Length: 413
Ligand SMILES: Cc1cc2nc3c(=O)[nH]c(=O)nc-3n(C[C@H](O)[C@H](O)[C@H](O)COP(=O)(O)OP(=O)(O)OC[C@H]3O[C@@H](n4cnc5c(N)ncnc54)[C@H](O)[C@@H]3O)c2cc1C
Image (cartoon, rainbow, N blue to C red; front, side, top):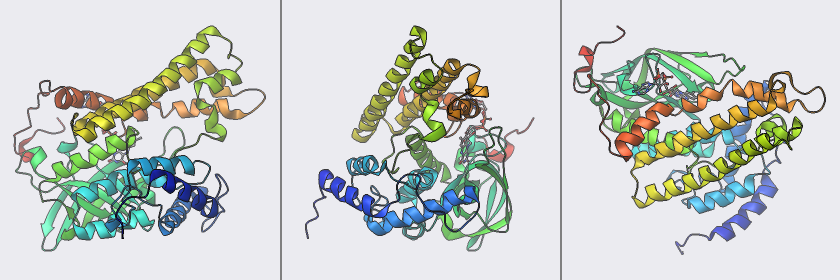
């Protein structure tokens, strides 16, 4: 049998036919399994992922040993283009596939890859991330959730927060402290924890815009098998850095492990500056036209930036931390565009238009999440720190606690 890869064009044509025969058209997915619309999204995502898996189109860039297709980013890009008219399980891209599974392929044991990576690609499992804690997400190495080894198990106590869509997940990659005598970066371990264990109390967080995607979790003697340790005990910082690399890559728009593209329809459609300008009757205003042109230029620059940084990281010209550049642009550009759209819409961002579609009103709602872009996946300030220290090799930020045993570090004073 030839081990030559199928050409991208042949793959594209095969994907086009398969998608037409098997996937529901955008918005035409029948309701199944639940009456709750929020839960429906997740039920649908699992059904669609299982379809992709059965058809040989799931995990296009993941290794075949773990359920993927072993193909290239060019094959993935072709599939994404072809999939635009169809309902796709986009909710599973981040963090389940592009962050948690990608990290496990690099750092997990064979058993973990077979269970969790194959499980995620086949649509059986959903993975999420338990990293941030109430004491602060930027200082990730200062986390307080502890895991204690007990024979063939670990016992976990502590609290995580801001876990996106954890309520819909089955397992989480969870960073914990396993050695309190080591300096903060050297006493951490990455483990996989079941999300729905009775020893984990989960609460959903209601946001100002009505979203309940964030969760917080409280662990009271949660017991997990020691075989759920990812990498070596106390080497969790290395594993966590790998996961954060995939997070920056995915959030920045440069991941080969995301499949499908969000298509702006209905209420979301009006969120582009040009559409808003047309809807509010300002399309001929020279000042507004300048803003629209600027927004378009930013989109083009961002697209080129993602390509340039991805090529640089792949060739080794740039260090892996260069993913912070994409991550930073992903926060700065959409935030500036959101400000611009709000300015163009004026009061109608809140009141809506007296006639016509209520799209414009969605701008006000959307603006409430503006700041999330410069926090999720690590804050913009932390991205700037990383670019200066790890890409431009400028001096490192001072940290008094870097080499101190963690139990001696002063906290909460
Ligand atoms: C949309 C979204 C999704 C998220 N999903 C998840 C998830 O799935 N799992 C998860 O574990 N977490 C998640 N988070 C949490 C996210 O990782 C944290 O919000 C982020 O790391 C910042 O941590 P913090 O909110 O505790 O802010 P803090 O760390 O308290 O920071 C507060 C402010 O101080 C600044 N700051 C802090 N330290 C420095 C420094 N050394 N130099 C310069 N400035 C500094 C920060 O930039 C920030 O502006 C998510 C957050 C968002 C908004």
